[in-house]
Every structure is written in C-alpha cells, then in structure tokens.
Image (tube, rainbow, N blue to C red; front, side):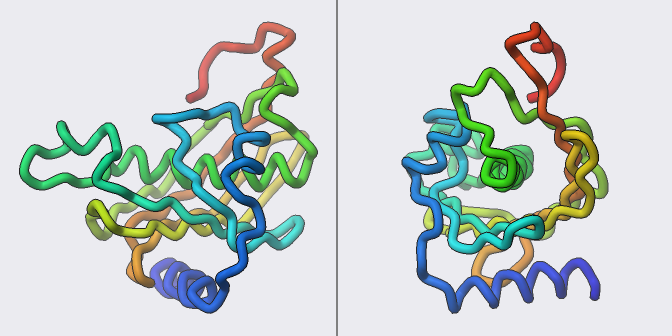
Length: 174
C-alpha cells in the first residue's frame, strides 16, 4: 500500500470513531510537554503493540501563527513532525508505563523520509496516525502521518529513544 493510501485509510477509519481513549489530562500525565508545546489534544484509537491515532486541534490562537506567516497563518512543518513525535511518545508511555515525572524522557533519534503534502491552517483538525515498525531495547521506529479531512499533510519515519535523565543523559534530542 502506498504511503498516501495508508494515511488516507488511517484517517478514514478514524472518522468513524468518536470515542476518546486518552484525554488531555491523561496525555499530560504521560508527556512532560506543556503549553505552548503540547501538540496532542486527545487519543481516539490505540492498538497495543501496534498503533495509535491522536488529534491536534489547530486554532488561530496557536503562538506560532502571528509570525508564520503574517497574513497567511500556516502551521510550521517542523511542528507537524513534533506533533507526530508526541503521539509516538504517548504510544510508548502507554506501552511501557513511562510517566511525565518518571525521570525518563522520550527523545528524537532520527527523522527520515519526511514529506509535506498540504498546508495546515487555523481551524483544521490534524489527525496523527502512528504505527510502530520496530522496538528494540528502548529504541522505537515509527511510520507516522498527519492528515486533515483524510488528505495527507505530512508523513515521516521517526526513530525515538527513551533516555534516563536521572543518570545525567540530558544531551541531544528534542
């Protein structure tokens, strides 16, 4: 299945689902991110050891819109990637029991094959779909996509790693 078809299929499956699996309070218990950098609003689908689908409601009040771009507010591509990475973080926290206050952080290790297909505007609802491809000793590789109304906006392969901050492993990552 092509990447575009995969993202479209994932988004169409989600449109039939309205149940919230994890709400914003649950997510804040998992991720260390906070406003203005928490980019996952809720999780609407989760399949243990396989995948997760989350929502980011993009509003005109986002702090990046005044400067990106004046007169044509557009969500920066790097923040779409970050939103997908945070969805990966929620998945991993649910799988491992990792919590925001655990002394461990889930970092980026690599971004591959990133493609941007559509701009994201205020009022759009970004559907984030992630699928785990590999998990080996705390290193995860994910196939990710972000779409709006079933139309692919962004896709990438993301590799992330769990680091023990309590030991002083604070270097690198985002």
